[in-house]
Image (cartoon, rainbow, N blue to C red; front, top):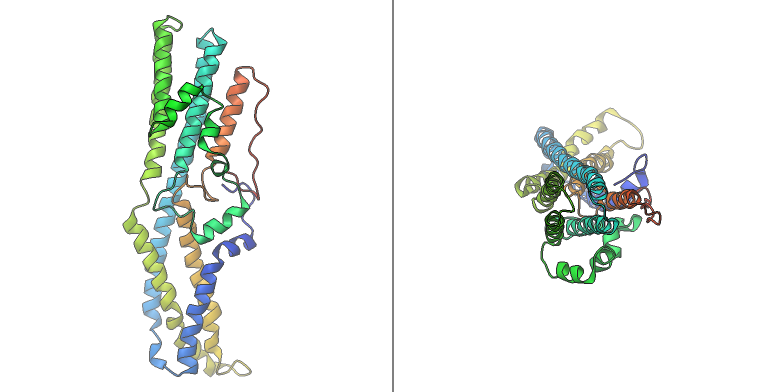
Length: 335
C-alpha cells in the first residue's frame, strides 16, 4: 500500500516502461509501411478505431471499478479483524483471573494472525506479483513474509508441541482457532469462566472464522477470467489498430502547413499513438495490480503492518512494554 502523497511520475514510468517500448514499435512500423514504403491501403478508417476505443474504455473502466471493490472489501475485512482482536484481548484479560492463561490466549491469537497472513501471501496461478514489471518493482519495498520463514515467525507464539502439530496441518489458521476453542471449553469446564463469558468468547471465535473465510474467498476467487481476458484482448487490439487509424488523419495535415514538417506530418502518429495507447495500457496494468489484494504487490492491503499494530496493542493491554516496533514504509510503500 502506498502511504505517501502520490506515486512519482518517474516511478510510474519505470513500472510501465516495457509497455512504452512495445507501443513505440507498434507506432513506428505502420508509419514506415505507409509513408516510406507507400503501402497506403494499410490505413484503417478512424471511425472503426474510435468505436473500438470507446468499447475498450468501458471494459477497462469496468474492470478497474471491480478490482477496486475487491481491494476495498479486503481492507474492510482486515479492519474488522483489527477491531475484533482488540475485543478478544479485553475478554481474555478481564474474564480470566490467571495472567498466564490470558497470555496463552492472546499469544495464540498472534499465531492465528501470523498463519492467516502467510496463507494470504501464498502464490496462486492467476496472480501477477511475479510478472516482470511487478517483480522488478519489488526492490522499492519489502514483503515481510518473504524475509522470514513461517516456522520462525510462528515459534514466538506457541509451545513446541503446538507448533509441531500446526506445522503438520493443511489449513493452519483454522487449526489454531480450533485450539483456541478447545482451550476456552476447558476453562469453562474448570469453572474459570462463567457461561455468559464462555458464550461471548465463542462468539468472538466465530467472528474470526467468518473473517478468515472472507479473506480466503477473496484470495481463492480471482477476478472472473472471462472479463480479465476480454479486457486484455480489447486493450491489445486497440493499441495495435490505433496507429493505423491515425495515418490518414495526420497525412491530411500536410495540405494545410508549410515548413520543415510539410510532407512528414504522418510521423506524429508515433508520439500521439504512444501517449494514447500508454494511457489505456497503464489503466489496465493498474487494474491488474489491484486485482489480488493479498499477493504482495505495491498496492496491496497492508496486512503485515496491521498484524504488527494488533500485536503491539494487545501486548500493551496485558502490561508488556517490550513490544516490537511498528513496521515502517520503504519508499512510501508498506505491506
